[in-house]
Image 1 (tube, helix red, strand yellow):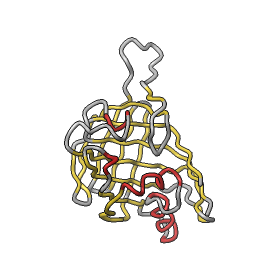
Image 2 (cartoon, helix red, strand yellow):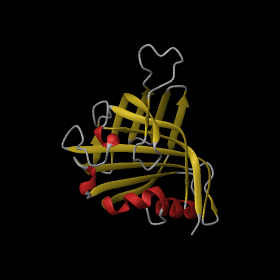
Image 3 (cartoon, rainbow, N blue to C red):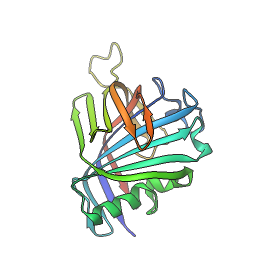
Length: 200
């Protein structure tokens, strides 16, 4: 069982800026739940001999206020151009069955509420990142550049526990319309990272 994926990542969630869950999974969310959408644009990848280059995956989750309590509801979108074999392998990785970062989170998932193919668009334009999934998801986040930072470099969190990595850029939602698998929310905050790299 060997696989590797590299690409770019963005997310938005229902917490106010900044999301307490990103500080630590055992901090409570802003409200009595955390609803989050995570988008992965895979630039290169191979899962047990299956080429995954160019595929996109979007996860949507509904979790308790304290994420470590488990019983997450998880929905998975795989881009419509994926072959049946690619879809199967991607669901195994992003569902945690093949280990890696999502494998560490798999015990927290109580129910997979659906897996669907969909048209997935991910666009990175400087500080702005847009994700569209069919008619279900449409959001745009913008990386936060602190007042007085003349270089234009956005704020980054370092040392966090997150499946994508320990160093992520903080962002704020500019537009959101999210309603998929019975999970709906207005994204208010976000994270972006120009690259992720996973292997198992």
